[in-house]
Length: 188
Image (cartoon, rainbow, N blue to C red):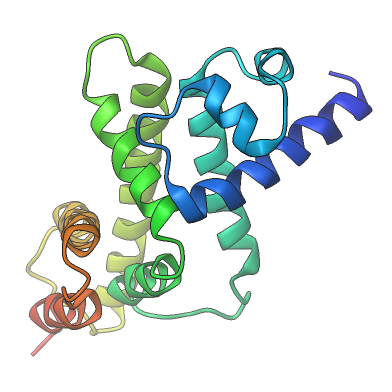
């Protein structure tokens, strides 16, 4: 893709992040997405093969933007990473809804784009968090009698599950619940 095309694709993604942050993407056709973005259906089809590819790319770009916005000195506990992400996500419920929609879609047959993206995303996140658990075990902050891989999977499951509950009931205390999980993992 030429430089102009790369820029245009990024402009579409940037605008789509704003739209989905506000509205989510449930039940939105590629044509309706184009209208919301002020882009023709043909332009979207030029840059994205399918609605699913667009949605995955929007989520990927939004997640990267969030990571880029985090201060480089952000050094919190392994559970604190997820608490920080949940706090950041609180301001963009549409993107949390998009994430949940894409994860659910990844479980259905024929949704290979979403399945590949989330399979790799979860595997990468589990590795990253397991490494953080090992660090915290070496620093005597997390119990040494637990599997780092199991702890990583549990932290992700807790964070994702709490965010789903929060979408359904905004009174769910994500931070308090993650703080409880962190205390359960702490070395006594």
